[in-house]
Image (spheres, rainbow, N blue to C red):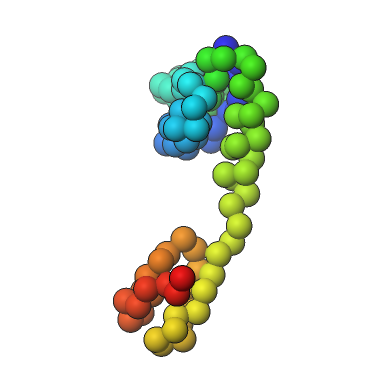
Length: 101
């Protein structure tokens, strides 16, 4: 087993682990509940970590997470009301029109 990355919190660590597992890279979240002793040990020692179970997948896992963390900023203009929509939304928040394909 090799450590891929240290996550800022358990929710992010679990999300990253699920994404890697879905891409065919079995992994685990270590230190999932160590945050409860954060005052007793250095804070960086209590953060959750994502580990791949197969050592040869370490580089691929790091590359995939780097790509996921640098997702392109997406925006589009609603064809119905001309509202600018930012983020991953596929429907206009203002009028409900669908994003053009």
